[in-house]
Amino acid sequence: NAGVMQNPRHLVRRRGQEARLRCSPMKGHSHVYWYRQLPEEGLKFMVYLQKENIIDESGMPKERFSAEFPKEGPSILRIQQVVRGDSAAYFCASSSLVLGGLETQYFGPGTRLLVL
Amino acid sequence: SQKIEQNSEALNIQEGKTATLTCNYTNYSPAYLQWYRQDPGRGPVFLLLIRENEKEKRKERLKVTFDTTLKQSLFHITASQPADSATYLCALGGDSNYQLIWGAGTKLIIKP
Image 1 (cartoon, chains in turn yellow, orange):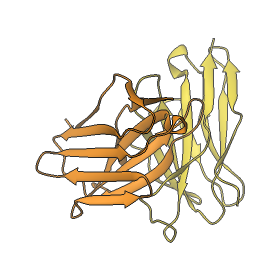
Image 2: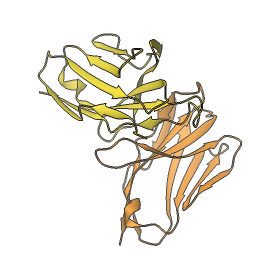
Image 3: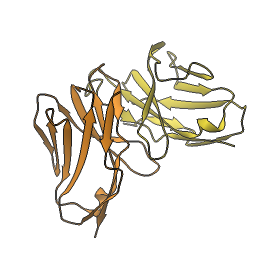
Image 4: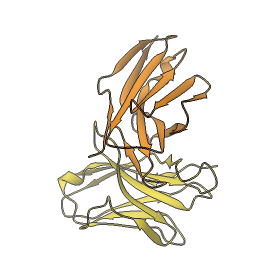
């Protein structure tokens, strides 16, 4: 039973380019969360999605950032016109209403974004 | 504002001893608290969840306590092993059934 998968694991972009991060939740999970982590800091919630719906995007910057979780395929976190301050590790987590409940989140290995 | 604190200094423990990590919080009344383990270059891994009406939870060599009066949780690893070396994160939940507030983590080093 594959866990949460994220790709790419490492992404290097120049300022002004777009970054696209992908997340495939655990099998049977329909709830996806995106987090951002800076060194020596806690995880910061960005957005919570269900299939085809954004439930809570209160932690995501209003500009340049967007997220989707289509009916088919992985969830995508998209950062347009990246700046150096976007450099961080971005983690995706998934959960199930059945297995462990929404409180128990299972994390992917993360995508480390470096903006040059 | 809500604040969650974990010891930022690394904790060095001799193999075989009990390691105890602390999570303190302020301006918050969580319905539950979770502990995760994070290894370098990897995502957090869920370990234990304890609810506000539970005083203690155990899982194999792990024990978590939750004191809502002191606003503190303690995380214990008994008979510690070098493989237990990692960063341990605590996270509070409650305002919603999904949004967590995360501590920055404590790095635990178990010396053989």
